[in-house]
Picture 1 (tube, helix red, strand yellow):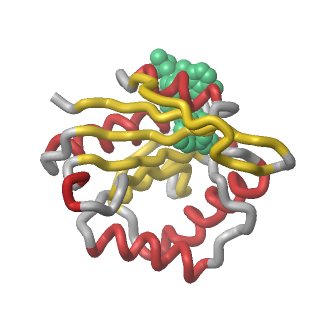
Picture 2 (picture 1 turned 30 degrees about the vertical axis):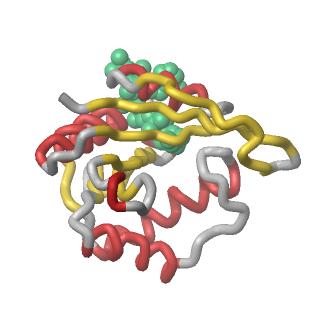
Picture 3 (picture 1 turned 120 degrees about the horizontal axis):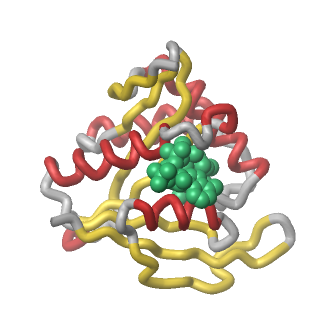
Length: 165
Ligand SMILES: CC(C)(COP(=O)(O)OP(=O)(O)OC[C@H]1O[C@@H](n2cnc3c(N)ncnc32)[C@H](O)[C@@H]1OP(=O)(O)O)[C@@H](O)C(=O)NCCC(=O)NCCS
């Protein structure tokens, strides 16, 4: 199994969309109810490119296995050294070290870009993502209770933070 990390290309959009839409339908990792269209996903990715935010693809033997990206945490100017990131690995490739590669590259890129802090907003039911983030030094700094409603239940958002040195 050969895994490479590379920059996003437009041809990756459908693979990213498939991973996102799977998680929208089957998990609380995303708080959307409705699957995204190709056009909406492409517009989001193009917006990241335009703003020089990274979209990193993990490719295993020519197949898109996962991706990591970040963008604005909030939109007011003083937040400009803070980013919110996400890492997704498709089901077939989880537990093989791909998330680790993506997260390490995101952290390295954030440092290169002069970012001061990274934030993950994680559903409290997603313990694997909380555990995953702790591996990289992220600390839980807040819990917004009952901030989401999906699958007929209240969801709580865990905020995890890494200050970059
Ligand atoms: C969370 C996620 C990105 C992890 O990616 P992955 O490729 O499966 O993780 P890796 O195999 O690279 O593991 C990296 C580390 O995290 C730990 N980890 C990964 N999944 C874990 C789990 N379910 N429970 C506990 N620890 C876990 C691994 O033990 C590993 O630690 P190590 O380096 O000390 O061995 C992936 O499971 C995923 O995409 N989940 C669904 C989408 C999601 O929830 N994304 C996060 C949204 S904020």
